[in-house]
Image (tube, rainbow, N blue to C red; front, side, top):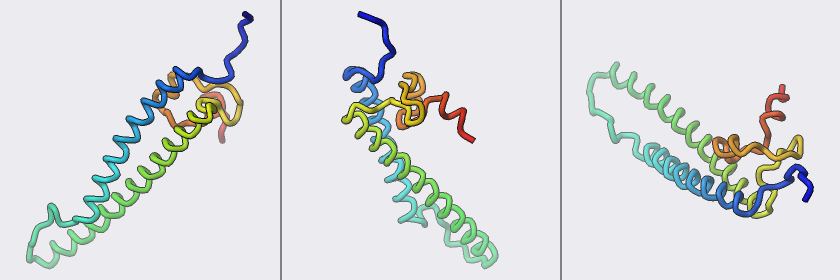
Length: 127
């Protein structure tokens, strides 16, 4: 048997990645739910302070907080979509193949960033 470079991960390796991704998805969805909850209940830690200036300041910070929660939620949704796309690649057995070089992405990298589609080599070449 000649020693040629692997072109794809084995089913057992893909299963290992699938478990990592499924777990990350579960956590990401929980975090997204928590963010959505804090957006729908903005007054959980609000105070009914009657001082006008204080109220205005608080409204401003509440708006800012709401914006940052929205940004976090949007990022989280994107992350979830990336993870779901990675699961599809696992099903297609194309998971872990760099979309730039066509080579296998290192396992270490996939364990840390399981939704990546770029090897470090390709990532470093990016402008």
